[in-house]
Each structure stands twice: as structure tokens, then as C-alpha cells.
Length: 588
Image (cartoon, rainbow, N blue to C red; front, side):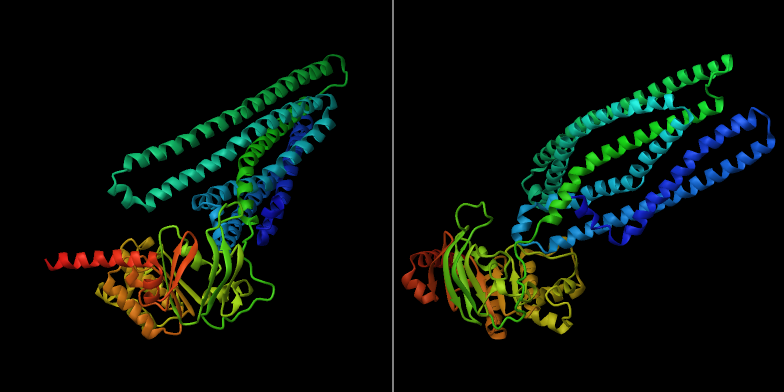
């Protein structure tokens, strides 16, 4: 896991390595300072030697200055390295997400991915910064200080060695109990982001159904769960501070008691004891050692918190897309012909029944294919196999006479334009949204595509025309306008295959007919798949597929299906009857 994360350090290796070096320099200076102070007290102040006092004072000033410089540099390098590491980590995760197939994305919820890109990365960033500074400083300071203490008085130094295992056992128990709670907390954050995102995305529905109070209850429930888990975790971590205080005060008391006895004993009978300066140094080193232990405890606490975050980040980075380019890909799609050979498909390996079963179909290039079927009949699933948004579980899908798994993904998808059932527009101008289809499209090409999609009229009616700003999600345009803009965007790709997944459901029948007429006249060489609920939308298609339960139960032209398919005939009759009744009502 650590090796995987450290790959994101990259160009920030130098500051990441300079940080511990500067920390070591700072520690060395801080370890020397108590020795200089002891010498200053014993040989300078107590003996009244002003020359020695001046000399040691200057050395102390130099040591303090160097410690300050090293400390500032270590702080600067650590901040630079950790910020860069976090930036690279977000970059790597986000870019990796772009390669995911739909199946991979289905594995992680959108709210979970947002949490991993933000909160989890921040936790790992903090741990990285603490590891390059405090995790280096604390053990080095503790080791050097212990060495100095043993040099001054070996008996007294054993006091610290007795405190270390007590603190170590306590920290281990705290970490093992706190980690599962933090792991649960971050999953709660996923739920919170999901609730908030769902609410904001569907705020119009919430308000129209007057469900604000229910949404508040959902938010409060998740928020309360996070609060409760955090309180539980903090109660466990709270033992860290009193444990540290106990060790610090116990060591200080023992050192003061033993030191005082040694000094008094040395003064009474001349036995080997301690000087005042030495006791001052030992107390200073005691503070250093205990502060180092406290730093280590803080590092361990932060690592405990970030371990769960690190695992969640690595999950995203380690997830390999189940749709990959072949070793020797084909880069050219010959034409828009499509063929399904014994195709079966299901979502995920653990899924039970197949969504698509025994699909055999051949569509010549330039044909118009209409697809009808009830909800859940897998109409959308069928067409999503063409650009390899999913791969067939069994069988094969051919485009231009080649298995789609033989193509370079970018080359294949550049020749297939999809207008999905859920239309998406992005914040920006209308022209910027349309150029998603072709970044190099001229203004005239944009207008031509909009004329084919019957979108030019309402765009020109806006005061700013094609420079009209679209809000996030296209909330400031109607459903029908959004659909027509998405169709125009797809047409700008000039694809060999155009797929409209129920993409004219929000437009009136007259506009729908004009769009289909433009398709026949302007892009006859493009293979067109039109998924619709209205028979009138597919009535003039070259081939009409009737789907039910993930199978193609009938196919043919309108006239053939009227004779041979009872399902098609019933749908046509019911819709025709409804249209006739609406017409009579209008005449009245």
C-alpha cells in the first residue's frame, strides 16, 4: 500500500528527502544546546569566568540560530512536498477514474469517490507531512537525548527506558481499538455525501413533493452516526494524553528526586554525584525525550486515522478497468455495420440472470434501426455494447466487420456517438457544450448540426444566442431543449454510428418527425439506432426490433411487424387509438 502511494511523490522527491535531513540538523543543534548550557553553568556562571560565559553564550546563539534555520527549512520543504504529493495523488486518482468502464464505476458510488478525492487525500497528506518531519525528528531526538543522558549519568537514563515500553503498550492498545472506528467513519462520510448530493441534484423534486422534512431527517440520521462514531473514536484517543502526562510527570519527579540526592551526596562526602549543570541538562533532555514520545504518539494517532483513508485511495488506484485496449489494436473503423453474434450479457460476475440472452443480429451500414420494448427489456444495455461501455459476457459484437474488442477504444468511440437516456450538459456556453462533439468545429458547422437537431430556432431566440450560459446540469433549459442540444453535440462528431437512447421523449411528435427527416436526408451513410417508446418515432425505420425480457422477440419493418408481431401490433393500436382520441378532443 505504501509503495503504491509513494509513486505519487514523483517530482517532489527532492524536498521530501531534504525535509528529514534538515530535521536531523535541527535535532543535532537542539541536542548540543543542553550540553553548552551545562558547561556554561558549571564552568562559567558558578566560577564567575566572564570570558568563558561570553564564549559559550556565542556558541549557544549560533546553535540556536542554526536550529531555527534548519527548522524553517524543514517546515518549508515538508509543506511543499506534502502539498505536491496530495496534488499528484488527486491527479492520479482522477486520471485513473477516466479509464474506468461503466462496470468499474458501478463498483464505487459517486459520493464515495468524492470523499476519497477530498477528505481521504487530506488525511494522507497530513500523515505524509508528519512522517517526513515528526516521525523523523521524534526517534532521532529520543535516541540522541538518551545517548547524552547515558553519558551524563547512566543510572538516571534507565528511568526513560522504563517509561518507553509503558507508553508503547498503551499506544498499541489505543491504535488497535481506534482504527476500526475511523474505518467506519469514512464510510459514513460516503453516506453523507450521497445524501447531500442526491438532495441537491433532485432539489426540484424534493420541493415539488414537499419532502424537505424527510430529507432533513435523512441528513440528521447520517450526521448523527458520524458524530457518534467520532465521539467514540476520540474517547479512545483521549487516553493518549493522560498516558503521556503520567509518563512525563513520573519521569520528571524521579529525575528530580534522584538528581537532588546525587547533588547533595556529592556535596556532603565528595562521592561521585552530579553537578547543577548536569541536572539541568538531564532535565532538558528529559523534556526532549518525553516530547519526542508525545510526538510519536501524535504520529501514531494520525497514521491510525489515515490508514483507512490510504486503503480507500489504493482501492481506487488498484482497480483496473475491465475494458482494455488489445495489444495490437485496430485504429480504423471501416463502416457503420453492426453485428451481434450469440450475445449474452449480465452486470458483474456475481449477477444471477443474464440481462441480454441469445442476441443475434446483423445491421448493414447506413441503416436506421428502431428499438421498442417495455421498461427493463434491456434496450439501453444492447446499444451500450456497441462502443464497449460494457463488454459482452458471452458472444461477440462486431462493428465494421471487426470484433469491438480488437479496436483501440478511442478510435472506436470516436466513430460512435451516443445521446444517452439521461442527457447531460455542463456549465459553460451553448457553443462550448456543443464543441464537446468536435473541439475544432466552426460556427457554421455548429449551426448546421443545430438545424438538423431542430435546436437552432430556440437558440437564436436567446438574447446571447450560442453564447448563452448553460447552468450545471442544464437546469436553465427545458427537457426538450436539452435533448436537442445533446443530439446536435453528437452530430458534430460526424460518427459512423449514431445511437439515440430515448433521446426525443421530451420533444413533440412534429419536432421528432423533423429530426428523423433530417437524419434521412443529411446523414444517410450513418447507421442510426433509435430507442423510443412511441411507435411513430421508429415507424419508418429500416429495421424495428421488439425486445422483451432481454431478448429480441421480433424484428422487421413496420408492415412486417404489424402482420407478424402481436406485441408490436398491440403497442401500435393502443398508441394510435390514444392519438385519435386526442385529435377528436382537440377538434371539439
